[in-house]
Image (cartoon, rainbow, N blue to C red; front, side):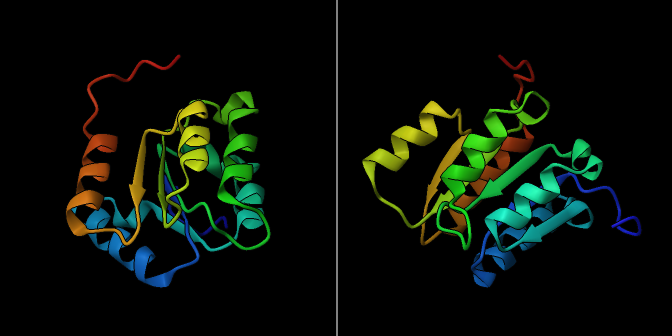
Length: 137
């Protein structure tokens, strides 16, 4: 991974269409060069343990992933001091009120229901990268 530009945004999503939609929107915001997409929860957890992940400013996360659910990954992220305050945007097909509550409890910045519309996705991207409150709790 030494040859890659610094990753600022991590997409953890196993649906290639959703990754493509997200990449297009991030490129429009001039952030496309700094994005990494991972399609597996365990692989994402491995990446988050590396020093390369120190530059992350946002994580786009699907809840239904191979090998480890997005909620398990999110719980892991929130339990480690180094990544505890990483802004997370969940994009999921789950309409479970339990999943939504878990996401709220784990301080998810945005929860976008799939199928993701361009408008909903754009709103989530804007709320992440145009936030005025940079303070974290």
